Image (cartoon, rainbow over all chains, first blue to last red; front, side):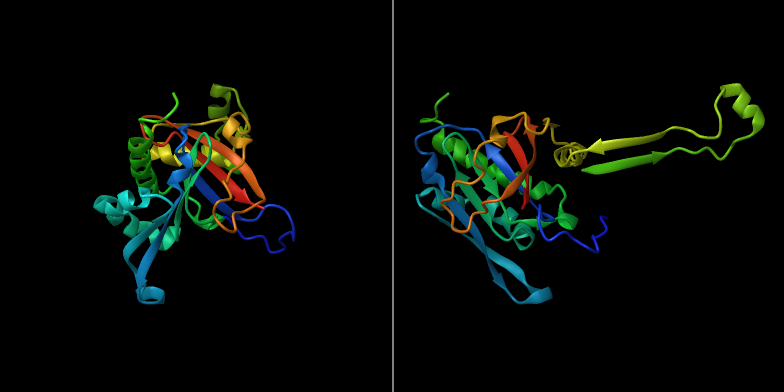
Length: 133
Length: 100
């Protein structure tokens, strides 16, 4: 476990990390895939739990993700740690990421990889006919 | 950057043993330097994910913009910590970033 620096520098890189899951796909429809997932929670502090998730987005793609029951079940497991999931499309690739995490919580999250992989599957199904090879 | 420290001092340091193998009390200390993407790639491999950590700065994804800025309050200052290439999945790469 990393020991916190007693005299941290007031400038430079912070102790917060983010993992981006990237799909390399080039299509004219990439920018229609902008979406965000937020948890719907009940309770406070130790009793806080995720009862559902809500996808919001620019196009009907968010409805496809909302309709996937298995994805919703997986998201309920991790949304308290991850906080929020964003699908951030660019011209030649699409990034999927959560919130920034402190270095002491920085480790590989297998469920998050499975979630990103399932979202990527939906993205590829949607973009495959129009994607540039 | 993490440092893996392997100190392999032998407790059995009898005179005859030294003569047999021809080395003294001090054994080599192996220091293994790992970048953050290599560290994460090792964790992923332990979980059965087929992946490979690329040399930091070697992939075009690392030089381009990391955010589309279509979300409000997207970070402007971030540090690239390397890319991991995945095989046999819908996800092609994993990119590690540090906030500045």
